[in-house]
Image (cartoon, rainbow, N blue to C red; front, top):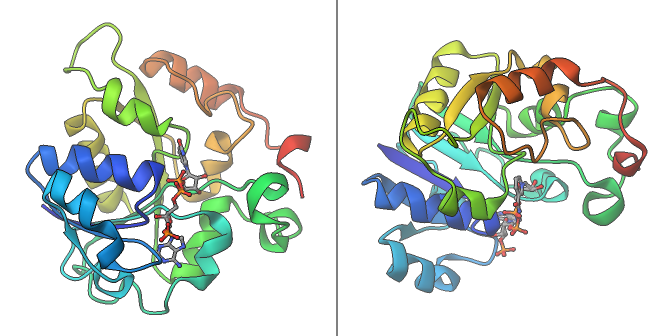
Length: 220
Ligand SMILES: NC(=O)c1ccc[n+]([C@@H]2O[C@H](COP(=O)([O-])OP(=O)(O)OC[C@H]3O[C@@H](n4cnc5c(N)ncnc54)[C@H](OP(=O)(O)O)[C@@H]3O)[C@@H](O)[C@H]2O)c1
């Protein structure tokens, strides 16, 4: 598949490593330009591109930048993606350490991914947000392995969500459908499933146990 990755940090870098190893055609971008991604390109075979080109023709686009950077992303970022492209948002809101206070999330009550979706102007699927970046490299397991981890996935576009569920399975994790984007508070920072290393049943139980109230550590 043709996959565009916008953000080449902890998560974007490791997704580039895993997805190229699986044989996907990966274009990867950061904020500083393709010449700064030569080492990652050499290591993985991914194509470094400007952010404005990362989504060109892509079946799946991963947006994996800090939330505070989302409004700075160029407009029309996703215009060249395939018509039925799935756009994955891995983002988390860290108002105190990183992102500053975001009124749309705290006052208007938008889920973090709904806020991001509005900025991007394209439906998103929330995935990988509670997964330690290193686990993408170290914790992939074959289907049926007793210690295979499960990851929650939320989104409104059912066809796009199915693509992402399949991609996660291909990466060596079970995927749990966690509902629509308005349900995705169940997997935001501070919830039981966030950072959980568990199987399908544990992830389902953790999603069900979540409280909609934002934890003090995650309020601006
Ligand atoms: N770290 C984790 O284990 C983890 C796990 C799950 C989810 N997350 C979430 O996933 C998101 C990314 O986290 P991360 O740890 O991978 O971040 P990170 O290591 O700080 O990397 C961020 C990347 O985004 C790029 N970027 C920033 N602004 C950009 C722009 N305007 N255009 C294009 N690229 C831009 C940066 O490029 P430059 O370096 O060139 O500025 C960098 O490559 C965050 O919301 C985070 O909370 C992180």
